[in-house]
Image (tube, rainbow, N blue to C red; front, side):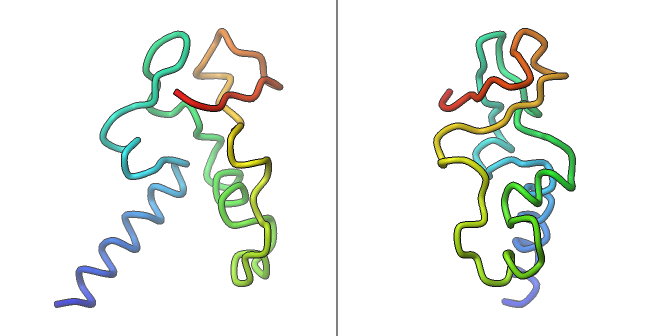
Length: 93
C-alpha cells in the first residue's frame, strides 16, 4: 500500500516537472502582468526537465548546481505571455 502511494506521488511529480509547475501551481495558476497563466513557465518537456534536473543524466543523479539561473528569476513561455519579451526574466507573482 505504501509503495502504491509513493509511486503515485512520484509519477504525479514527474508530470508536474514535465509541465514545469509546482504542486501549488497545479491548483492555482501564477499571475502575470496580463493575468493568470497556467502554462506561463512551460518551455516544453525537454527544456523543463533540463531546467530542473540539469542538461546531463549525471547532473540529475549527482545534483551539484544543475539549475539554470539564480533561483529567483525564471524563463517564461513568451508564446503564451504575448506582452513579454523572449529574453525577459520574470521572478515572483
